[in-house]
Structures are given as structure tokens and as C-alpha cells.
Length: 453
Image (cartoon, rainbow, N blue to C red; front, side, top):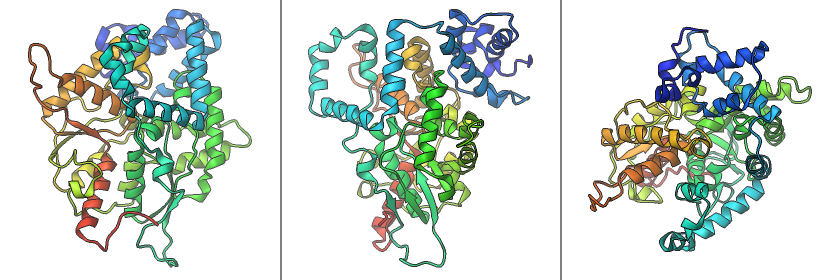
């Protein structure tokens, strides 16, 4: 395709106005390599990793060019030919991608160590004393962006099987049977989102199955050229959760969900898993998509201190929504989260300019391309603050962290303005707000409970 309709939607092209930094330019490079006119070089590899993978071009493309598969295949070829290899890069990729994120119990152990480092005050002391200045430059830059690890992880908050509290022991009408995926970063830093996901499913008559130890979905691996590991992790998921046993398999993270819906393609030539993977794709649903499809029950309560573990949301009434790139462009889910937010009493939804423009998180983009990621973060934060909203809702852990860090920095006091201009908006997930509204309703009516048995 040569029409160029993707160009105005591409954040990297918008940043540089260089053709090679556009989807059209990258596809031209891929085709030249496919036709044998060019070789895979270091500059080609760097170009493929300069792409955010935000998939905004797929929404704009009138011909339906399947850029995600081209993009992942190109990165896999870059890794196969080793044009970007270096001892430092090879070690980081081996440790993070192939070692740590393929072992969920080890990842939780690292998460527990990080929690102790943060909760004990050692992190704060290291920052105050300047010890963090002794870190290598890359780690010194990334240290303030580290997520706050929660005290309890998903398996400590959610039982393997939960049923609605008011479900009879014997029922002629079978409950909807769903499985919930808890993720990796989501499990460690946003386990409350997973708990809220289970709560809203219970409130809507679902029997919820949540395996306590779940493998990574493989999106990190597929997006970084390690398709072998992505396929192996997909097989582990299919061994753990049989799609034939459930009405739906629920994801609440935009980036993970976009990849999880591609298992059929990923394993299409696997004689053992191909049929199960195709069935998995049909059952995999984003939480917003699923709730709207089953006509979720509109809550009667307004989120309040009595219904929430935290009182942070008590005074908030205005809300804006930032769209996860892989939720709106990858999964084509945009109206459903807004429908949920509009259904919550006491909230006024204010649309954010460029709500579907990438915030710069893009997986590990803040690590590999920090300058571009920071510029995109500033652009997004400016639009969010312009709404005047007290809450920002988003449905992806990477976006959550990027927004939270950017808003905190934007609202921090400065030398010229020691008094902070305002408290930063609270960043949360739409299902957390919905779960708290159901909890407020239950508190007002003791006979009604959202929690399962």
C-alpha cells in the first residue's frame, strides 16, 4: 500500500517527519528485504525497534494491512540474524525475556523482594541519601519509574473458584463460567485490578475460575522477536486453561489481551495445539468487551470511602479515559470502557484530546527509546491535565505506570513554584471503579453482596 493514510496516525513519524519512521516506510524496507533487494542490517533492526508497535496504523489503513504480523516477523528476523547483538543486550534479553518472565514463581519471588525494599523504607532512604546516584546511568534513570509492588498478589486475594454469594447450591439456570487471567506486572503491581475484575464478574452472575499460578501470556516475547518463547508460553496457557471448559476467558490488560487473541495464528501449524488455540481465540474476551456483551448490571451505588479499600476516590467526580493502544487499535475496543464509566453513578466523563494517541509506554519502549517515550508522555499528560479531571481511567498496566509517573512529575513542586499547583489525578482501571460502585450498593443494601463464596 502506498496511500500514506497511516502517516498522520504514527507517533514516530509525527515526531520526526521521516518516511523511514512511518508504517509505509517500514513496510517498504520489509518488502525490499523479502524481495532480496536489501539485507537485514543493524540500521534495519534499529528501525524496527524504534517503532512503538502501537498499531494506530491498522486503524487508519483502508486496506486492512496486517502490520502486527509483519512487525513481529521483522523483529524475529532481526533477532535470528543477530544484527543488534551485544554482550549487554544479550544478557538482558536472556535474563528478563527468557529466564525471569518464563518462571511465574521466580517472578513473584523477585516481586516480593521489591515489595520489602519499598515497604521497609530502604528505597526511600536510598533516594534521600543519594545512593541511587551510584547506579549505572540507565538504572538511575529507570529507578524512579519502578512500579509500587502490592503487599498481596492475585493468588492471595482471589480463590481458585468463586461463585456469586447469592447463587443457590442447586440451580436450574447454569451460571456463566469464566476464567480470569492475572498477568505478570498486573499480578505484582495491580493485583487489586484482578480482584476487582473477579468482583464485577461475580456481581454479574459468573462463576469465576482463577488459577493461582499462571504463566506469562507471551506478549513481551512476541513483541521482541522471540516467537519461540511466545509459542511455548501459549502452550502452557492452553495446558492450564482448556477453552472448552469456559464460556469466556477474561483479560483485563489491553496489551496482553491483544496478544492473547492471536494464539490461533501463533500455533496454527502445531498439530497438537492448533485446534485448541483456535478455540481459545474465540473465547478470549477483554473484560469491558465481555461485560457489555452480557449486558452488565448498572450499579446503583456511587464509589465512596465505605465501599473502597482506599478513600482516594472519595472526592473525585470528573473522569477522563486514556485508551490503551492495544485495546483500541489491536482489539478494536473503544466504546465499551466508556459505556462502563458512563454507567457508574456520580461520575462525569470528560473526553481527552488524542485519547487513542500512544502515551509512550509501549511495553519496554521507555527502556529502549527513553527520549521519544518521554516526549510522548509529556504530550499525553498535557492533554489529561487540560480536561481538569480528577481521575484518569486506563486499562493497561504499562499505560497506568506511564501516566502515573508523568502526572506526578507534572504536578510536583519546582524551585520557581514551591507550592504544588495541584494534586495529580488518580490513575485507575475502569473495573476498579465499577467494583467500588457495586460495593457501595452492597453497603447500602446488606442483603446484596458482590463477593463470592
